[in-house]
Length: 100
Image (tube, rainbow, N blue to C red; front, side):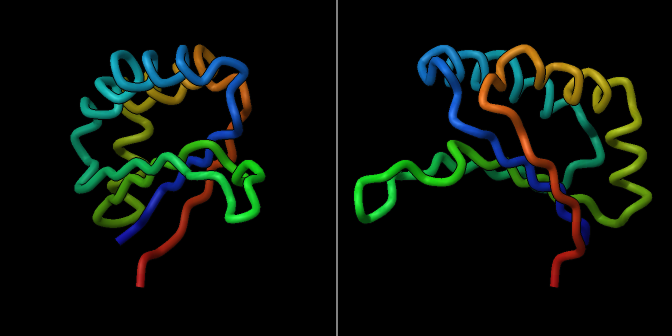
């Protein structure tokens, strides 16, 4: 199993981010047929009240590297990746690894 993790930095306008993320971006993610599981996390502040290192995380699971490459190389995958620039004002960090 391969997992693609997207870590979102803190956006300049969290309300606009959340609206766009839920109503525009995640429906695009849902069109990537090769994704076997998708999970999102919105981070809480740290115990000392400071902001978490990241604002949000998306984790996308694929059967293997071929499925990841096919999914992200597809028209749906390319549209999803290109869409990040439309709302992720805090920047993103993308990591890929094997699960287990």
